[in-house]
Structure formats: structure tokens, C-alpha cells
Length: 153
Image 1 (spheres, one colour):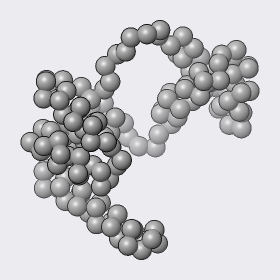
Image 2 (image 1 turned 90 degrees about the vertical axis):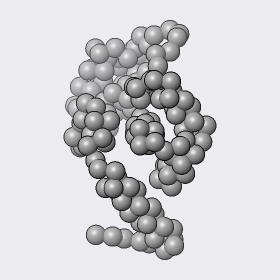
Image 3 (image 1 turned 180 degrees about the horizontal axis):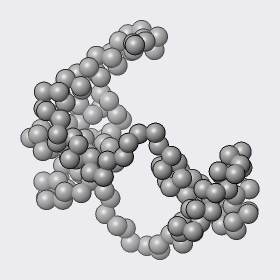
Image 4 (image 1 turned 45 degrees about the vertical axis):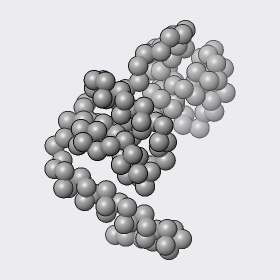
């Protein structure tokens, strides 16, 4: 999701898909095909960086009730295995894994949540944004040159 917002930001700045891919490949491992696909969507007027709803059977075990039950079980004992939770709640192992990775951990983040990341990114002046990418690139280069022994306070 963050990569899509970065792609959208670069699109709004007037960068090409190739330039955006070069910038992002230095920071994240995003494929060129993915960048071009999202550029096409933004060019076609799609504003939302979220995935489109997909066809198929809707999830049945990742209900708000099951999410809350998993959350409570983990709050009581963080050492529970996925298998133990699945057996207790009588839902599949995959459903428990999805609930934990997509719902439970997402809410326990330490970072402040912004409802619209695009608004936050638009508030950053272009020069500061470019400078931030350059600093990140420089730090990565230092880390590569020192075989991972680079440390900065």
C-alpha cells in the first residue's frame, strides 16, 4: 500500500513510470510491471491506491467477532500457537493466520495512523521529499559499501 502511495505521489509530481521505478527500486523491491500498472490506473483517473474489490467467495471466518475473539485470546496468552487458536475457535489455520497478520497486528502499530496518506504526502514540499529520498539513497550506499556495518545516530 505504501509503495502505491509513493507511486501515486510521483505520478502527481509528473514523473514518468520509468523514473518512479528507478527511484523506488533503490528503496523497495517493486517490480517495473507493478509501477507501470499503477501509473496506468492513475492516468485513467483512479484516485484510490487501494485494491479493487475482487470476485469470488467472501471471507467467512474473518468476521469482526472472530477477529475480536483472536485478539482477546492473544491478549490473555501471547504464547498461543496458530493451531491452538484455530482449534479453540473452530476455524481454519489459514483464517487464524490471516486474522493475526492482517487485523490484529495492524492495530497494534506504534505509528500514528493518518486516514489519508496522500494528503500527508502532498503537504511535504517537493524539495524536502526529494532530499529525503537522496538521504535514504546515500545511507543505503554507505551500508552497502561497509557490508552492513554502517551505523548512524
